Image 1 (cartoon, rainbow, N blue to C red):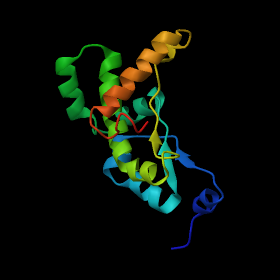
Image 2 (image 1 turned 180 degrees about the vertical axis):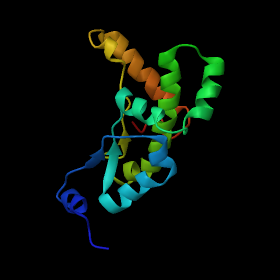
Image 3 (image 1 turned 90 degrees about the horizontal axis):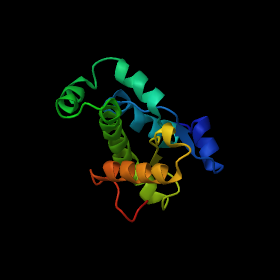
Length: 144
């Protein structure tokens, strides 16, 4: 198979990231395909992206029922669902991260924008999210 235009762009030093993450993208193998066929080396996410993914189909229903049995705070319910997808994407992108010495292979998760003017709160939330993602051991504490 010939290199895609994104592979050609990557060969020039541009990192190719996608701005979408969903359980379907992970479970169907579509993210793995994009990594292989289109040189994707990173993923961004945000609440709007996840809201759309959660609303489509039933991929999140089982986990949502489990989380709702333990958690009432809507933000924390959302984060539980989003963090699982981020963890799974991190696992898939880990070889990219390892192979590039940390240049690529990242998956983003957004800090609550309500903390925008609260530096200490933003830092604390970023650390909490990192720890939650890392809980699955898809990262090591010294790797990022």
